[in-house]
Amino acid sequence: MHFALLLAVLVTGKFTIASGHATLQADGKEIVLASKDEYLAAILTDERMQSKTMRVEGHWAEKDHSFEVAHLHTVKNGKQYRIAYYCPICNIWAFRPGDCVCCLQPTELRELGDEEAAQ
Image (cartoon, rainbow, N blue to C red):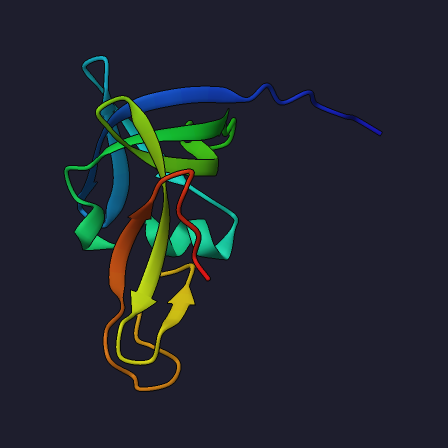
């Protein structure tokens, strides 16, 4: 058996979606982002995230040289925020973009600080 040690890496930059690919502009480079986690993968396709400063944690994928995201946060004024989605009509929280499971109206993107919880 072959085991590879994957070291976690933190990268901060401007998030963009270009040609259908989620990318992070960091240190003058464009980093293609991907995730095997269904929730993170959905967030990486959300156009409302465009131009936000993001901090991603993960590792470099050997196969296609993309960055495999394990965790992500937005960053404002040096503080990290978690991503959640909220329906104010039904008071329902979700952790990926899309319509509310109850009323089928679009959910709102919310950035939650440490003191805030998606209930």
